[in-house]
Image: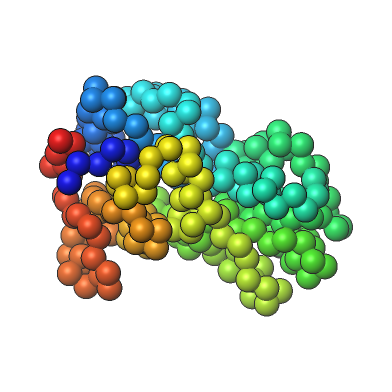
Length: 255
């Protein structure tokens, strides 16, 4: 089947950690050459879209317009704006997340914020977690930017944003609203931006739990590339099979 638009993961799909995936670079070039619309959809909240664009160009030779980048941070701000519960927030996260929320005119409130937003924070402290816990207990809307329990690094699988969210969930016994893949919130917004019917869109990624389940749970065809998180030997045991499985994006025919 020929797809009219693509939703594409970043780490593990177009590059891996600090390493280039040449087939990923060529895949974006092929989409651009054919004028096929695409959106890079990432659960990473540590970088602004501008930082993502710069990183892709400088480190991985992937040149893409700013409007083709949609992060879990952007989806989080969109959700907060849609909820319209107030303009105060307490945020656990790094530059990308905090900057975006501040630029959307939300002010920090450590006592009674309208929202508690939890993303990846490599410098998280007990005090930050305690402040977030107390605010959620007081009634703040509890948002997890993404459910990723781990992030792959050169050292191995490190705690992801989902691990920090899980701690606060355990402390409050209140379930968070998750924004990032595989959840409908980010996927529906991504489809809205792409402006193509979901039946004509393909979700491309390396992580079965986030990328492929984002497709499965949202009625979008999925393409698993076994260059990252989910290994080829795991595919036969997956509970629901992806629409397509390939070892390299070089194998994918856009026609």
